[in-house]
Amino acid sequence: MQRYETDVIIIGGGATGTGIARDCALRGIKAVLVEKDDLASGTTGRNHGLLHSGARYAVKDIQSASECIDENKILKKIARHCIEDTGGLFVTLPEDDQEYHFELIRRCEEAGIKCKKISVKEALRIEPNLNPEIIHALTVPDGTIDPFRLAASNILDAVERGGTLFTHTIVTDFIRNQDTIKGICFRNRLTKETFEIYGKVVVNASGVWGQKICEQAGIELKMFPSKGSMVIIDYRINNVVVNRCRKPSDGDIIVPGDTVSLIGTTSKKISYEKIDEAVVDDDEVEILLKDGEKLIPNVSKTRVLRAYCGVRPLVAISNEMDGRDISRGIVLVDHEQRDGAKGFISIAGGKLMTYRLMAEMATDLICEKLNINKFCTTHDIPLPGSEKKTSEHKRIKHFSGIPKSIVGSTQFRHGERVHRILKKDKKSYGLICECEMVTAGEVDYAIKNLFVKDIIDLRRRTRVGMGPCQGALCAYRAAGQIVQHEVADGEDASKMMIDFFEERWKGIKPILWGDALREMEFTYWIYQGLFGLGNLISGTKGSGKGVETLEEIDQF
Ligand SMILES: Cc1cc2nc3c(=O)[nH]c(=O)nc-3n(C[C@H](O)[C@H](O)[C@H](O)COP(=O)(O)OP(=O)(O)OC[C@H]3O[C@@H](n4cnc5c(N)ncnc54)[C@H](O)[C@@H]3O)c2cc1C
Image: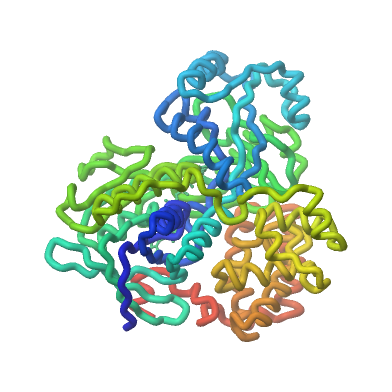
Protein backbone atom coordinates (compact mmCIF):
# COMPACT_ATOMS: atom_id res chain seq x y z
CA MET A 1 0.00 0.00 0.00
CA GLN A 2 1.42 3.38 -1.04
CA ARG A 3 1.39 6.09 1.62
CA TYR A 4 1.10 9.88 1.17
CA GLU A 5 0.96 12.91 3.42
CA THR A 6 -0.66 16.26 2.73
CA ASP A 7 -2.41 19.15 4.48
CA VAL A 8 -5.88 18.69 3.03
CA ILE A 9 -7.69 15.70 1.49
CA ILE A 10 -10.70 16.53 -0.67
CA ILE A 11 -13.22 13.79 -1.49
CA GLY A 12 -15.17 14.45 -4.72
CA GLY A 13 -14.18 15.84 -8.11
CA GLY A 14 -17.34 17.81 -8.90
CA ALA A 15 -17.47 21.60 -9.13
CA THR A 16 -17.31 21.95 -5.33
CA GLY A 17 -14.31 19.64 -4.79
CA THR A 18 -12.31 21.02 -7.72
CA GLY A 19 -13.16 24.55 -6.57
CA ILE A 20 -11.80 23.78 -3.08
CA ALA A 21 -8.64 22.26 -4.61
CA ARG A 22 -8.08 25.49 -6.56
CA ASP A 23 -8.80 27.75 -3.59
CA CYS A 24 -6.35 25.73 -1.44
CA ALA A 25 -3.67 25.95 -4.15
CA LEU A 26 -4.12 29.72 -4.43
CA ARG A 27 -3.72 30.07 -0.65
CA GLY A 28 -0.57 27.90 -0.71
CA ILE A 29 -2.17 24.92 1.05
CA LYS A 30 -1.09 21.42 -0.07
CA ALA A 31 -4.16 19.44 -1.13
CA VAL A 32 -4.97 16.08 -2.72
CA LEU A 33 -8.32 15.45 -4.43
CA VAL A 34 -9.72 11.92 -4.72
CA GLU A 35 -12.55 11.19 -7.18
CA LYS A 36 -14.14 7.76 -7.60
CA ASP A 37 -14.90 8.16 -11.28
CA ASP A 38 -14.02 11.10 -13.51
CA LEU A 39 -14.15 14.86 -12.95
CA ALA A 40 -17.77 16.12 -13.18
CA SER A 41 -19.12 12.58 -13.40
CA GLY A 42 -21.55 13.22 -10.50
CA THR A 43 -24.32 15.85 -10.34
CA THR A 44 -21.94 18.48 -11.74
CA GLY A 45 -22.13 16.77 -15.14
CA ARG A 46 -25.87 16.08 -14.87
CA ASN A 47 -27.70 19.41 -14.77
CA HIS A 48 -28.92 22.15 -17.15
CA GLY A 49 -25.74 24.18 -17.04
CA LEU A 50 -27.82 27.27 -16.31
CA LEU A 51 -25.88 30.24 -15.00
CA HIS A 52 -28.79 31.50 -12.94
CA SER A 53 -29.38 35.20 -12.58
CA GLY A 54 -31.18 34.25 -9.37
CA ALA A 55 -34.59 35.20 -10.77
CA ARG A 56 -35.79 31.59 -10.57
CA TYR A 57 -35.35 31.69 -6.79
CA ALA A 58 -36.25 35.35 -6.16
CA VAL A 59 -39.87 34.77 -5.13
CA LYS A 60 -39.26 31.90 -2.70
CA ASP A 61 -35.65 32.07 -1.56
CA ILE A 62 -34.12 35.53 -1.59
CA GLN A 63 -30.84 34.33 -0.03
CA SER A 64 -30.21 31.86 -2.89
CA ALA A 65 -31.26 34.51 -5.40
CA SER A 66 -28.71 37.01 -4.01
CA GLU A 67 -25.96 34.36 -3.93
CA CYS A 68 -26.73 33.52 -7.57
CA ILE A 69 -26.54 37.08 -8.85
CA ASP A 70 -23.30 37.77 -6.97
CA GLU A 71 -21.68 34.59 -8.30
CA ASN A 72 -23.15 35.18 -11.77
CA LYS A 73 -21.17 38.44 -11.97
CA ILE A 74 -17.97 36.86 -10.62
CA LEU A 75 -18.08 33.82 -12.91
CA LYS A 76 -18.67 35.97 -15.99
CA LYS A 77 -15.32 37.56 -15.10
CA ILE A 78 -13.18 34.60 -14.00
CA ALA A 79 -14.65 31.72 -16.04
CA ARG A 80 -15.32 33.47 -19.36
CA HIS A 81 -14.50 30.46 -21.51
CA CYS A 82 -16.91 28.23 -19.60
CA ILE A 83 -19.78 30.68 -19.97
CA GLU A 84 -22.06 31.95 -22.69
CA ASP A 85 -23.54 35.26 -21.69
CA THR A 86 -26.78 34.53 -23.52
CA GLY A 87 -29.18 36.51 -21.34
CA GLY A 88 -32.51 35.04 -20.31
CA LEU A 89 -36.23 35.58 -20.70
CA PHE A 90 -39.09 34.88 -18.30
CA VAL A 91 -42.28 34.50 -20.34
CA THR A 92 -45.89 34.16 -19.20
CA LEU A 93 -48.31 31.94 -21.11
CA PRO A 94 -52.06 32.74 -21.18
CA GLU A 95 -52.75 29.81 -18.79
CA ASP A 96 -50.22 31.05 -16.16
CA ASP A 97 -50.97 33.11 -13.05
CA GLN A 98 -50.26 36.68 -14.18
CA GLU A 99 -49.68 37.92 -10.64
CA TYR A 100 -46.43 35.86 -10.57
CA HIS A 101 -44.99 38.08 -13.32
CA PHE A 102 -45.48 41.23 -11.22
CA GLU A 103 -44.25 39.57 -8.03
CA LEU A 104 -41.11 38.40 -9.82
CA ILE A 105 -40.34 41.99 -10.89
CA ARG A 106 -40.68 43.19 -7.27
CA ARG A 107 -38.58 40.35 -5.82
CA CYS A 108 -35.81 40.67 -8.41
CA GLU A 109 -35.52 44.33 -7.48
CA GLU A 110 -35.17 43.37 -3.78
CA ALA A 111 -32.45 40.80 -4.62
CA GLY A 112 -30.54 43.23 -6.86
CA ILE A 113 -31.24 41.27 -10.09
CA LYS A 114 -31.63 43.39 -13.23
CA CYS A 115 -35.05 42.45 -14.54
CA LYS A 116 -36.70 44.43 -17.32
CA LYS A 117 -40.23 44.18 -18.66
CA ILE A 118 -40.27 44.11 -22.47
CA SER A 119 -43.03 43.90 -25.06
CA VAL A 120 -44.05 40.57 -26.58
CA LYS A 121 -42.85 41.92 -29.96
CA GLU A 122 -39.40 42.63 -28.49
CA ALA A 123 -39.27 39.17 -26.88
CA LEU A 124 -40.03 37.58 -30.25
CA ARG A 125 -37.31 39.67 -31.85
CA ILE A 126 -34.79 38.42 -29.26
CA GLU A 127 -36.02 34.83 -29.53
CA PRO A 128 -37.93 34.27 -32.79
CA ASN A 129 -38.80 30.65 -31.98
CA LEU A 130 -40.79 31.64 -28.85
CA ASN A 131 -44.46 30.82 -28.61
CA PRO A 132 -46.15 33.96 -30.10
CA GLU A 133 -49.07 33.47 -27.69
CA ILE A 134 -47.06 34.67 -24.65
CA ILE A 135 -48.62 37.59 -22.81
CA HIS A 136 -45.70 38.98 -20.74
CA ALA A 137 -41.92 38.89 -21.03
CA LEU A 138 -39.00 39.94 -18.82
CA THR A 139 -35.27 39.96 -19.52
CA VAL A 140 -32.82 38.76 -16.83
CA PRO A 141 -29.03 38.26 -16.84
CA ASP A 142 -29.17 34.42 -17.08
CA GLY A 143 -26.46 32.62 -19.04
CA THR A 144 -25.11 29.14 -19.56
CA ILE A 145 -22.14 27.45 -17.95
CA ASP A 146 -20.34 24.32 -19.14
CA PRO A 147 -19.83 22.16 -16.03
CA PHE A 148 -17.20 19.89 -17.60
CA ARG A 149 -15.00 22.79 -18.65
CA LEU A 150 -15.50 24.44 -15.27
CA ALA A 151 -14.40 21.42 -13.21
CA ALA A 152 -11.47 20.69 -15.55
CA SER A 153 -10.24 24.32 -15.45
CA ASN A 154 -10.43 24.46 -11.67
CA ILE A 155 -8.40 21.30 -11.18
CA LEU A 156 -5.99 22.23 -13.98
CA ASP A 157 -5.22 25.44 -12.11
CA ALA A 158 -4.90 23.57 -8.80
CA VAL A 159 -2.50 21.01 -10.29
CA GLU A 160 -0.46 23.67 -12.09
CA ARG A 161 -0.08 25.37 -8.70
CA GLY A 162 1.08 22.20 -6.92
CA GLY A 163 -2.13 20.29 -6.09
CA THR A 164 -2.58 16.55 -6.68
CA LEU A 165 -5.46 14.72 -8.35
CA PHE A 166 -6.45 11.06 -8.28
CA THR A 167 -9.37 10.17 -10.56
CA HIS A 168 -10.99 6.72 -10.80
CA THR A 169 -10.06 6.18 -7.14
CA ILE A 170 -12.64 5.41 -4.50
CA VAL A 171 -12.48 6.09 -0.78
CA THR A 172 -12.63 2.72 0.96
CA ASP A 173 -12.06 3.65 4.61
CA PHE A 174 -11.21 6.38 7.10
CA ILE A 175 -8.10 6.41 9.26
CA ARG A 176 -9.06 7.49 12.79
CA ASN A 177 -7.17 8.02 15.99
CA GLN A 178 -9.75 8.26 18.78
CA ASP A 179 -11.76 11.41 18.03
CA THR A 180 -9.54 12.63 15.15
CA ILE A 181 -9.88 11.79 11.45
CA LYS A 182 -6.29 11.30 10.33
CA GLY A 183 -6.77 10.37 6.71
CA ILE A 184 -8.37 7.98 4.25
CA CYS A 185 -7.66 4.71 2.43
CA PHE A 186 -8.53 4.63 -1.24
CA ARG A 187 -8.28 2.32 -4.19
CA ASN A 188 -7.61 2.92 -7.86
CA ARG A 189 -10.44 1.27 -9.78
CA LEU A 190 -8.36 0.90 -12.95
CA THR A 191 -5.14 -0.53 -11.55
CA LYS A 192 -6.58 -1.91 -8.28
CA GLU A 193 -3.68 -0.28 -6.37
CA THR A 194 -4.47 0.77 -2.81
CA PHE A 195 -3.29 3.90 -1.01
CA GLU A 196 -3.27 5.52 2.42
CA ILE A 197 -3.19 9.25 2.69
CA TYR A 198 -2.75 11.26 5.87
CA GLY A 199 -3.94 14.85 6.12
CA LYS A 200 -4.72 17.50 8.73
CA VAL A 201 -8.19 18.16 7.34
CA VAL A 202 -10.47 15.83 5.32
CA VAL A 203 -13.18 17.57 3.28
CA ASN A 204 -16.26 15.66 2.22
CA ALA A 205 -17.30 17.36 -1.06
CA SER A 206 -18.96 14.28 -2.48
CA GLY A 207 -22.38 15.81 -3.16
CA VAL A 208 -25.27 13.44 -2.76
CA TRP A 209 -22.81 10.64 -1.84
CA GLY A 210 -21.91 12.73 1.24
CA GLN A 211 -24.18 10.58 3.39
CA LYS A 212 -22.25 7.41 2.45
CA ILE A 213 -18.90 9.10 3.05
CA CYS A 214 -20.06 10.23 6.49
CA GLU A 215 -21.27 6.71 7.25
CA GLN A 216 -17.77 5.45 6.42
CA ALA A 217 -16.42 7.97 8.93
CA GLY A 218 -18.95 6.78 11.51
CA ILE A 219 -21.03 9.98 11.34
CA GLU A 220 -24.61 10.65 10.29
CA LEU A 221 -25.40 13.24 7.60
CA LYS A 222 -28.81 12.83 6.11
CA MET A 223 -29.33 13.65 2.43
CA PHE A 224 -32.73 13.95 0.79
CA PRO A 225 -32.04 12.97 -2.81
CA SER A 226 -34.29 14.56 -5.41
CA LYS A 227 -33.99 13.37 -9.01
CA GLY A 228 -34.35 15.75 -11.95
CA SER A 229 -34.53 14.64 -15.59
CA MET A 230 -33.72 16.60 -18.76
CA VAL A 231 -33.92 15.98 -22.52
CA ILE A 232 -31.52 17.21 -25.19
CA ILE A 233 -32.75 18.05 -28.66
CA ASP A 234 -30.60 17.86 -31.75
CA TYR A 235 -30.17 21.50 -32.59
CA ARG A 236 -29.99 24.83 -30.90
CA ILE A 237 -33.54 26.13 -31.12
CA ASN A 238 -32.99 29.09 -28.79
CA ASN A 239 -30.16 31.49 -28.24
CA VAL A 240 -31.20 32.87 -24.87
CA VAL A 241 -32.30 30.90 -21.81
CA VAL A 242 -36.11 30.68 -21.86
CA ASN A 243 -37.85 30.33 -18.47
CA ARG A 244 -41.55 29.97 -17.87
CA CYS A 245 -42.71 32.69 -15.51
CA ARG A 246 -44.47 30.66 -12.85
CA LYS A 247 -43.70 28.90 -9.57
CA PRO A 248 -40.77 26.53 -10.40
CA SER A 249 -42.26 23.39 -11.87
CA ASP A 250 -41.60 20.59 -14.40
CA GLY A 251 -40.52 21.47 -17.95
CA ASP A 252 -40.20 25.20 -17.49
CA ILE A 253 -36.65 25.93 -18.71
CA ILE A 254 -35.07 25.62 -22.16
CA VAL A 255 -31.32 26.18 -22.13
CA PRO A 256 -29.12 26.52 -25.23
CA GLY A 257 -25.80 24.67 -24.93
CA ASP A 258 -23.11 24.56 -27.62
CA THR A 259 -24.81 22.99 -30.69
CA VAL A 260 -27.96 21.74 -28.93
CA SER A 261 -30.76 22.86 -26.59
CA LEU A 262 -32.01 21.14 -23.48
CA ILE A 263 -35.34 21.10 -21.70
CA GLY A 264 -35.51 20.74 -17.94
CA THR A 265 -36.42 19.60 -15.45
CA THR A 266 -38.54 17.35 -13.27
CA SER A 267 -38.28 16.78 -9.53
CA LYS A 268 -38.91 13.40 -7.93
CA LYS A 269 -37.83 12.32 -4.46
CA ILE A 270 -36.02 8.98 -4.64
CA SER A 271 -34.81 6.67 -1.91
CA TYR A 272 -31.17 7.04 -0.95
CA GLU A 273 -30.40 3.43 -1.92
CA LYS A 274 -31.37 4.28 -5.53
CA ILE A 275 -29.04 7.23 -6.13
CA ASP A 276 -26.63 5.19 -8.27
CA GLU A 277 -29.43 3.65 -10.32
CA ALA A 278 -31.53 6.75 -11.04
CA VAL A 279 -32.95 6.61 -14.57
CA VAL A 280 -35.23 8.83 -16.64
CA ASP A 281 -38.85 7.61 -16.57
CA ASP A 282 -41.05 7.64 -19.69
CA ASP A 283 -43.58 10.01 -18.12
CA GLU A 284 -40.79 12.53 -17.43
CA VAL A 285 -39.79 12.61 -21.12
CA GLU A 286 -43.43 13.13 -22.04
CA ILE A 287 -43.90 16.01 -19.58
CA LEU A 288 -40.68 17.75 -20.64
CA LEU A 289 -41.51 17.59 -24.36
CA LYS A 290 -45.12 18.63 -23.82
CA ASP A 291 -44.23 21.62 -21.62
CA GLY A 292 -41.15 22.53 -23.67
CA GLU A 293 -43.34 22.77 -26.76
CA LYS A 294 -45.54 25.30 -24.97
CA LEU A 295 -42.53 27.62 -24.62
CA ILE A 296 -41.00 26.94 -28.06
CA PRO A 297 -43.40 25.18 -30.46
CA ASN A 298 -40.48 24.06 -32.70
CA VAL A 299 -39.59 21.48 -30.03
CA SER A 300 -42.10 19.18 -31.78
CA LYS A 301 -40.10 19.38 -35.02
CA THR A 302 -36.77 18.38 -33.48
CA ARG A 303 -35.17 14.99 -32.92
CA VAL A 304 -34.59 14.13 -29.27
CA LEU A 305 -30.92 13.19 -28.86
CA ARG A 306 -30.91 11.82 -25.35
CA ALA A 307 -32.41 12.10 -21.87
CA TYR A 308 -30.46 12.08 -18.63
CA CYS A 309 -30.98 12.75 -14.96
CA GLY A 310 -29.10 14.02 -11.94
CA VAL A 311 -29.72 13.82 -8.20
CA ARG A 312 -29.82 17.06 -6.20
CA PRO A 313 -27.67 16.91 -3.07
CA LEU A 314 -30.17 18.33 -0.54
CA VAL A 315 -29.11 18.13 3.10
CA ALA A 316 -30.94 17.93 6.43
CA ILE A 317 -29.05 20.34 8.69
CA SER A 318 -29.56 18.57 12.02
CA ASN A 319 -29.60 14.87 12.80
CA GLU A 320 -33.38 14.86 13.08
CA MET A 321 -34.87 12.24 10.82
CA ASP A 322 -38.24 13.79 10.00
CA GLY A 323 -37.00 15.95 7.13
CA ARG A 324 -38.16 19.30 8.56
CA ASP A 325 -34.68 20.73 8.32
CA ILE A 326 -34.03 20.06 4.66
CA SER A 327 -32.07 22.94 3.22
CA ARG A 328 -31.80 23.90 -0.43
CA GLY A 329 -28.99 26.35 0.37
CA ILE A 330 -25.30 25.79 1.04
CA VAL A 331 -24.58 23.55 4.04
CA LEU A 332 -21.12 23.59 5.63
CA VAL A 333 -20.73 21.18 8.55
CA ASP A 334 -17.79 21.28 10.93
CA HIS A 335 -17.94 17.72 12.23
CA GLU A 336 -15.69 18.63 15.16
CA GLN A 337 -18.38 21.03 16.39
CA ARG A 338 -21.36 18.85 15.50
CA ASP A 339 -20.12 15.30 16.03
CA GLY A 340 -16.81 15.61 17.89
CA ALA A 341 -14.85 14.31 14.84
CA LYS A 342 -11.74 16.51 14.64
CA GLY A 343 -10.30 17.35 11.22
CA PHE A 344 -13.42 16.49 9.23
CA ILE A 345 -15.79 18.82 7.39
CA SER A 346 -18.63 18.37 4.87
CA ILE A 347 -19.88 20.83 2.29
CA ALA A 348 -22.98 20.17 0.18
CA GLY A 349 -26.19 21.68 -1.19
CA GLY A 350 -25.98 24.91 -3.16
CA LYS A 351 -25.75 24.94 -6.92
CA LEU A 352 -23.25 24.43 -9.66
CA MET A 353 -22.97 28.17 -10.06
CA THR A 354 -22.37 28.79 -6.36
CA TYR A 355 -19.50 26.27 -6.35
CA ARG A 356 -16.87 29.04 -5.95
CA LEU A 357 -18.63 30.50 -2.93
CA MET A 358 -18.97 27.00 -1.42
CA ALA A 359 -15.26 26.42 -2.03
CA GLU A 360 -14.44 29.77 -0.40
CA MET A 361 -16.54 28.89 2.68
CA ALA A 362 -14.93 25.44 3.00
CA THR A 363 -11.40 26.79 2.49
CA ASP A 364 -11.97 29.57 5.06
CA LEU A 365 -12.83 26.83 7.56
CA ILE A 366 -9.78 24.80 6.50
CA CYS A 367 -7.59 27.90 7.09
CA GLU A 368 -9.15 28.39 10.52
CA LYS A 369 -8.34 24.77 11.41
CA LEU A 370 -4.77 25.00 10.07
CA ASN A 371 -4.23 28.41 11.63
CA ILE A 372 -3.45 29.97 8.25
CA ASN A 373 -4.17 33.62 7.66
CA LYS A 374 -4.68 33.81 3.89
CA PHE A 375 -7.69 35.30 2.12
CA CYS A 376 -9.61 33.94 -0.82
CA THR A 377 -8.69 35.30 -4.26
CA THR A 378 -10.74 33.03 -6.50
CA HIS A 379 -13.19 35.86 -7.24
CA ASP A 380 -10.35 37.84 -8.80
CA ILE A 381 -8.00 35.43 -10.56
CA PRO A 382 -9.25 34.05 -13.90
CA LEU A 383 -9.27 30.31 -14.56
CA PRO A 384 -6.80 28.87 -17.08
CA GLY A 385 -8.29 29.73 -20.47
CA SER A 386 -10.15 32.80 -19.21
CA GLU A 387 -7.11 35.06 -19.00
CA LYS A 388 -6.98 38.33 -20.91
CA LYS A 389 -8.42 37.88 -24.40
CA THR A 390 -6.06 38.09 -27.38
CA SER A 391 -7.33 40.66 -29.88
CA GLU A 392 -9.25 39.37 -32.90
CA HIS A 393 -6.59 40.83 -35.21
CA LYS A 394 -3.73 39.02 -33.42
CA ARG A 395 -5.68 35.78 -33.35
CA ILE A 396 -6.44 35.79 -37.09
CA LYS A 397 -2.78 36.50 -37.80
CA HIS A 398 -1.59 33.80 -35.40
CA PHE A 399 -3.84 31.08 -36.82
CA SER A 400 -3.68 32.04 -40.50
CA GLY A 401 -3.99 28.88 -42.60
CA ILE A 402 -6.15 27.03 -40.04
CA PRO A 403 -9.90 26.99 -40.84
CA LYS A 404 -11.69 29.69 -38.84
CA SER A 405 -14.42 27.27 -37.69
CA ILE A 406 -11.77 25.05 -36.08
CA VAL A 407 -10.07 27.97 -34.33
CA GLY A 408 -13.51 29.18 -33.18
CA SER A 409 -14.70 25.89 -31.67
CA THR A 410 -11.34 25.14 -30.00
CA GLN A 411 -11.27 28.60 -28.50
CA PHE A 412 -14.91 28.26 -27.44
CA ARG A 413 -14.01 25.18 -25.40
CA HIS A 414 -10.54 26.05 -24.10
CA GLY A 415 -10.43 29.84 -24.21
CA GLU A 416 -6.92 31.26 -24.43
CA ARG A 417 -5.41 27.76 -24.14
CA VAL A 418 -6.23 27.52 -27.86
CA HIS A 419 -2.68 28.79 -28.34
CA ARG A 420 -1.30 25.63 -26.73
CA ILE A 421 -3.61 23.37 -28.75
CA LEU A 422 -3.61 24.35 -32.41
CA LYS A 423 -0.35 23.96 -34.24
CA LYS A 424 0.37 24.84 -37.84
CA ASP A 425 0.92 21.21 -38.97
CA LYS A 426 -2.18 19.88 -40.74
CA LYS A 427 -2.33 16.72 -38.64
CA SER A 428 -3.10 18.70 -35.50
CA TYR A 429 -6.26 20.17 -36.99
CA GLY A 430 -7.51 16.98 -38.66
CA LEU A 431 -11.06 16.33 -37.38
CA ILE A 432 -11.82 13.50 -34.97
CA CYS A 433 -15.44 14.54 -34.31
CA GLU A 434 -17.25 16.46 -37.05
CA CYS A 435 -20.41 17.24 -35.05
CA GLU A 436 -18.44 19.17 -32.42
CA MET A 437 -15.37 20.07 -34.53
CA VAL A 438 -12.90 18.32 -32.22
CA THR A 439 -9.44 18.04 -33.77
CA ALA A 440 -6.55 15.62 -33.23
CA GLY A 441 -4.65 18.55 -31.64
CA GLU A 442 -7.40 19.09 -29.09
CA VAL A 443 -7.50 15.37 -28.25
CA ASP A 444 -3.71 15.39 -27.89
CA TYR A 445 -3.89 18.39 -25.51
CA ALA A 446 -6.70 16.80 -23.47
CA ILE A 447 -4.90 13.48 -23.08
CA LYS A 448 -1.62 15.12 -22.07
CA ASN A 449 -2.99 17.88 -19.82
CA LEU A 450 -6.54 17.18 -18.72
CA PHE A 451 -6.33 13.86 -16.86
CA VAL A 452 -7.97 11.63 -19.48
CA LYS A 453 -8.02 7.91 -18.71
CA ASP A 454 -10.59 6.65 -21.24
CA ILE A 455 -12.97 7.71 -24.04
CA ILE A 456 -15.67 8.83 -21.62
CA ASP A 457 -13.21 11.17 -19.88
CA LEU A 458 -12.19 12.44 -23.32
CA ARG A 459 -15.83 13.16 -24.14
CA ARG A 460 -16.15 15.29 -20.99
CA ARG A 461 -13.00 17.31 -21.84
CA THR A 462 -13.61 17.85 -25.56
CA ARG A 463 -17.27 17.01 -26.41
CA VAL A 464 -16.18 14.10 -28.65
CA GLY A 465 -19.38 12.09 -29.25
CA MET A 466 -21.74 14.63 -27.68
CA GLY A 467 -23.22 15.97 -30.92
CA PRO A 468 -26.06 14.72 -33.16
CA CYS A 469 -24.35 11.38 -34.09
CA GLN A 470 -23.77 10.54 -30.40
CA GLY A 471 -20.40 8.93 -31.15
CA ALA A 472 -21.37 6.82 -34.19
CA LEU A 473 -18.77 8.45 -36.42
CA CYS A 474 -16.10 9.44 -33.93
CA ALA A 475 -15.84 6.84 -31.14
CA TYR A 476 -13.52 4.58 -33.15
CA ARG A 477 -11.33 7.55 -34.09
CA ALA A 478 -11.18 8.58 -30.44
CA ALA A 479 -10.22 4.99 -29.55
CA GLY A 480 -7.45 5.20 -32.16
CA GLN A 481 -6.12 8.35 -30.47
CA ILE A 482 -6.23 6.62 -27.08
CA VAL A 483 -4.00 3.86 -28.50
CA GLN A 484 -1.68 6.30 -30.29
CA HIS A 485 -1.11 8.15 -27.03
CA GLU A 486 -0.50 4.85 -25.22
CA VAL A 487 -3.32 5.41 -22.72
CA ALA A 488 -4.39 1.83 -23.55
CA ASP A 489 -3.55 -0.97 -25.97
CA GLY A 490 -5.83 -1.93 -28.87
CA GLU A 491 -7.85 -4.48 -26.95
CA ASP A 492 -8.48 -2.22 -23.96
CA ALA A 493 -9.31 0.71 -26.24
CA SER A 494 -11.93 -1.50 -27.95
CA LYS A 495 -13.38 -2.32 -24.56
CA MET A 496 -13.43 1.38 -23.77
CA MET A 497 -15.63 1.82 -26.84
CA ILE A 498 -18.10 -0.64 -25.32
CA ASP A 499 -18.17 1.39 -22.10
CA PHE A 500 -18.58 4.58 -24.12
CA PHE A 501 -21.61 3.21 -26.00
CA GLU A 502 -23.10 1.61 -22.89
CA GLU A 503 -22.96 5.03 -21.29
CA ARG A 504 -24.44 6.77 -24.36
CA TRP A 505 -27.09 4.04 -24.50
CA LYS A 506 -28.38 4.98 -21.03
CA GLY A 507 -29.35 8.40 -22.38
CA ILE A 508 -30.74 7.16 -25.70
CA LYS A 509 -32.88 4.31 -24.34
CA PRO A 510 -35.66 6.55 -22.89
CA ILE A 511 -36.15 8.34 -26.24
CA LEU A 512 -35.76 5.45 -28.65
CA TRP A 513 -38.24 6.18 -31.41
CA GLY A 514 -38.27 7.71 -34.92
CA ASP A 515 -34.94 9.13 -36.11
CA ALA A 516 -33.18 8.32 -32.83
CA LEU A 517 -34.02 4.65 -33.37
CA ARG A 518 -32.76 4.78 -36.96
CA GLU A 519 -29.55 6.48 -35.80
CA MET A 520 -29.02 3.83 -33.12
CA GLU A 521 -29.53 1.02 -35.63
CA PHE A 522 -26.90 2.66 -37.85
CA THR A 523 -24.47 2.84 -34.89
CA TYR A 524 -25.18 -0.82 -34.13
CA TRP A 525 -24.33 -1.82 -37.73
CA ILE A 526 -20.98 -0.05 -37.51
CA TYR A 527 -19.89 -1.23 -34.08
CA GLN A 528 -21.40 -4.71 -34.01
CA GLY A 529 -21.71 -5.50 -37.74
CA LEU A 530 -18.34 -4.10 -38.80
CA PHE A 531 -16.19 -4.16 -35.65
CA GLY A 532 -17.86 -7.05 -33.80
CA LEU A 533 -17.64 -5.10 -30.55
CA GLY A 534 -20.37 -7.10 -28.82
CA ASN A 535 -18.10 -10.14 -28.86
CA LEU A 536 -15.75 -8.49 -26.36
CA ILE A 537 -16.40 -8.17 -22.62
CA SER A 538 -16.21 -4.68 -21.08
CA GLY A 539 -14.93 -3.63 -17.65
CA THR A 540 -11.24 -4.35 -18.18
CA LYS A 541 -8.26 -2.73 -16.57
CA GLY A 542 -8.52 -0.20 -19.43
CA SER A 543 -11.84 1.13 -18.28
CA GLY A 544 -12.55 -0.47 -14.92
CA LYS A 545 -16.15 0.68 -15.26
CA GLY A 546 -17.35 -2.77 -14.23
CA VAL A 547 -16.44 -2.01 -10.60
CA GLU A 548 -18.79 0.64 -9.26
CA THR A 549 -19.37 0.32 -5.54
CA LEU A 550 -17.53 -0.67 -2.43
CA GLU A 551 -19.52 -3.92 -2.32
CA GLU A 552 -18.38 -4.72 -5.86
CA ILE A 553 -14.80 -3.93 -4.91
CA ASP A 554 -15.06 -6.39 -2.05
CA GLN A 555 -16.31 -9.03 -4.47
CA PHE A 556 -13.75 -8.20 -7.13
C1 LIG B 1 -31.61 18.06 -12.48
C2 LIG B 1 -30.67 19.08 -11.92
C3 LIG B 1 -30.53 20.30 -12.56
C4 LIG B 1 -29.66 21.26 -12.04
N1 LIG B 1 -29.50 22.42 -12.73
C5 LIG B 1 -28.60 23.33 -12.27
C6 LIG B 1 -28.34 24.49 -13.05
O1 LIG B 1 -28.87 24.66 -14.14
N2 LIG B 1 -27.47 25.41 -12.52
C7 LIG B 1 -26.86 25.23 -11.32
O2 LIG B 1 -26.12 26.12 -10.91
N3 LIG B 1 -27.07 24.11 -10.59
C8 LIG B 1 -27.90 23.15 -11.05
N4 LIG B 1 -28.09 21.98 -10.34
C9 LIG B 1 -27.36 21.78 -9.08
C10 LIG B 1 -25.92 21.34 -9.31
O3 LIG B 1 -25.81 20.41 -10.38
C11 LIG B 1 -25.30 20.70 -8.07
O4 LIG B 1 -25.63 21.45 -6.94
C12 LIG B 1 -23.78 20.64 -8.17
O5 LIG B 1 -23.38 20.14 -9.41
C13 LIG B 1 -23.19 19.79 -7.05
O6 LIG B 1 -21.78 19.71 -7.24
P1 LIG B 1 -20.86 18.94 -6.19
O7 LIG B 1 -19.47 19.07 -6.64
O8 LIG B 1 -21.19 19.42 -4.83
O9 LIG B 1 -21.36 17.41 -6.28
P2 LIG B 1 -21.03 16.33 -7.42
O10 LIG B 1 -20.88 16.94 -8.74
O11 LIG B 1 -22.03 15.24 -7.30
O12 LIG B 1 -19.60 15.80 -7.00
C14 LIG B 1 -19.39 14.83 -6.01
C15 LIG B 1 -18.33 13.87 -6.51
O13 LIG B 1 -17.94 13.00 -5.44
C16 LIG B 1 -17.58 11.76 -6.02
N5 LIG B 1 -17.62 10.71 -5.01
C17 LIG B 1 -18.70 10.18 -4.42
N6 LIG B 1 -18.35 9.18 -3.57
C18 LIG B 1 -17.01 9.09 -3.64
C19 LIG B 1 -16.06 8.23 -3.02
N7 LIG B 1 -16.42 7.26 -2.17
N8 LIG B 1 -14.74 8.39 -3.31
C20 LIG B 1 -14.35 9.36 -4.17
N9 LIG B 1 -15.21 10.19 -4.80
C21 LIG B 1 -16.53 10.06 -4.53
C22 LIG B 1 -18.64 11.57 -7.10
O14 LIG B 1 -18.22 10.64 -8.09
C23 LIG B 1 -18.82 12.98 -7.64
O15 LIG B 1 -18.04 13.22 -8.80
C24 LIG B 1 -28.94 21.00 -10.84
C25 LIG B 1 -29.08 19.76 -10.22
C26 LIG B 1 -29.91 18.80 -10.75
C27 LIG B 1 -30.02 17.46 -10.11
